[in-house]
Length: 264
Image (cartoon, rainbow, N blue to C red; front, side, top):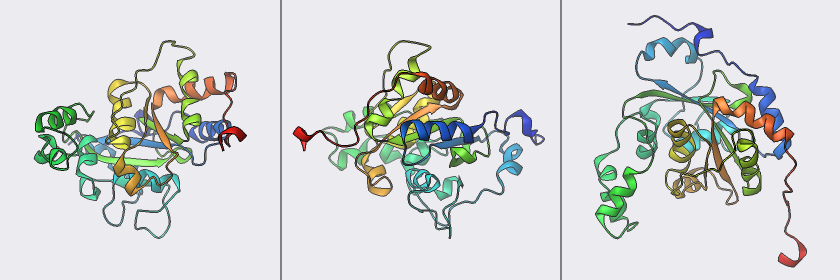
């Protein structure tokens, strides 16, 4: 058994996440603050235990989308008396098997992995196209993660690994220019419209080390995100401070709050 981690080695936040949150919320006029995510690795998981033991687990099972929705403060799906600022999720806390598998808590159930479920639900014309599509959804190695910690970014108990930002398209697309201000180039978005929160804006940014967008998915919208105008972005946490700085320095992009008269 390995010894406990020192707080300054990994766990202690290295940035002022409260200040960064305040700046991006004010600049983009976000309705909800961003959410931070930290995935506890299974290897030497005991080294992390003391740092997260005070973070509550949900009282009952919920989806990953619902956990994110809960900590950002929109709807309390946790089963706890008050909406928590952070939640710990173990494999047995997940209602959605695909979400837990994408996040590396265990392997996909065989009927999902081989495409059978989605084919039988008439989402594809053949079992083969269903299987191939499922294989292309980004997911972490089965069993590589022991716990998922989600939290309000302003109250980050740990340096996050990825930051999730939600808003209307104009707000999310306003992140694209600042993200590329220093590096240049274009963004190639990894998008399918399936596993929108767990895979597209959590796992994809972690695996590909770049910001990714999501239009969310049917499951996310059915179980958690009920505002049809919302979409999301996932940003590798190490790139988030520069993104906020660039956002403040860049020329403002007009964002209409209401439709012009001729389109009403």
